[in-house]
Amino acid sequence: MPTGSTEADPASEHDPEALKRHRALFRAIARRRNPKLRRTDITITDERVVKRAVKAAALGNAMEWFDFGIYSYLAVTIGKVFFPNGSGTISLLSSFATFAVAFLVRPLGGAFFGPLGDRVGRKKVLALTMIMMAAGTFCIGLIPSYAAIGFWSPALLILFRLVQGFSTGGEYGGASTFIAEYAPDKKRGYFGSFLEMGTLIGYTGAAGIVLILNSTVGADAMLHWGWRIPFLVAGPLGLVGLYLRLRLDETPAFQKLEASQTHFATGSPAEAEEEFTHLSENAPRKKISEIFAQQWPTLILCIALVGAYNIADYMLLSYMPTYLTDTLHYKESHGLLILLATMIALMLIITTVGRLNDRYGRKPLLMSGMLGFFITAIPAFLLVKQGSLAAVIAGMALLGLSLVCLLGTMSAALPALFPTDVRYGSLSIGYNLAVSLFGGTTPLVITALMGAFDGNVMVPAYYTMGAALVGVIAVACMEETAQQPLAGSPPSVATKEEAVEMITAQNQEPKF
Image (cartoon, rainbow, N blue to C red):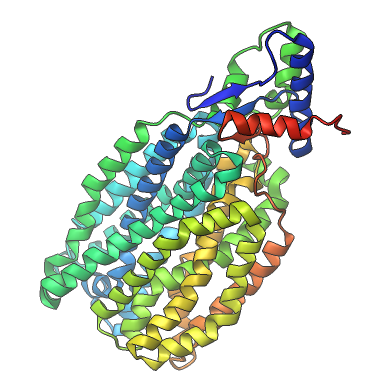
């Protein structure tokens, strides 16, 4: 029996015929979502275990993105420390190029950690990614400057950025899969929204510590030693995240999948074969080539969704402080303060978006976010361009409202695209290919385009609109998955009463 779940059969133990009918009904319900499923029990989740799992995944995710966000908010300073030769634009482009380098290896990390997570479990892989990210970030804080060791300084920076990128390749796919497989079907959007709250907490923590340092130690001290502090903080934070993740049990869905490979069902061998055929045929040892061969239509859809979402995400949460400082000549502390206020506002409403997509569906919320970016990008950047505090806040609010529709929904929608036996691997590969090609390159591409178009400050708006248009098409093509079991998994409910209600609703001489 998987920890954190209970297999429920509300039929009376004293009425074998009723028990038989209910089991047949469970199978019928499951086949409507998963045609290969032969045997299914409704999983009743333990809310305390679910909350603990969500907390560990979200806080671990926050620490990962704290590590990753530091580099974004110190891009200008890092450019001066590691790439001091050349103009300010060349230095900034070099810094963003190094930022993008980490995304080049993310697909490799996803291709390594994803299938590994489908084979050995989500928990072990998420602990490993936590260690690697914290170690890579901590080591960046120890690198001597270019003035001290010359060429080796940026070379070491690139090396540790590659370590960060490789570990992050296994993070989002694993964390979102972890939460999705623990959460009950009708609350997957709500619990999934906490994962992106963790992302916002990580970015907020990174922006906050950089803001404090910029305000207290001065520009010269930041160049000499102040920039190192946020990176060095990653060491102890990584240990906290590792502790939280190691305390958890494996997800119920993976435990059932794993048990099917090592145990026989009770009863006759024929019953065992019938009950577990669907799992033995889909053992979690899929090769990457098989994932591409069997899941390629869904992978394309995933890449389109994630690409559009990440361009908008990185444009607002990673590039915007640099845009305000380097392009609009805001004080660095002012740009970070505005972004901090925006992210705090998003955190206050993101779980509400999670509840809304549970109630009304993933597609309406995702479509609202994509259309929001397409329609409001130009007005928002025109407001930001005006430069007054009220106008900048209004522009950021327009972009933030569109982004939160995606943030609060995507972590529930993406894991539902793939079946349990290849979910971690497929999602990690699709997600990281999209992030590598489109998300992580966003600051670099926008900076380069602005240089090519004589500093046109509306370039970010046009780039975001193009991404949003792709996202609109992708959302239109996806299936609705709200309140439905994950593909390859049995129905999951929050209470016994909900299980009885599900059976009662279906127990009307169903015609399947």
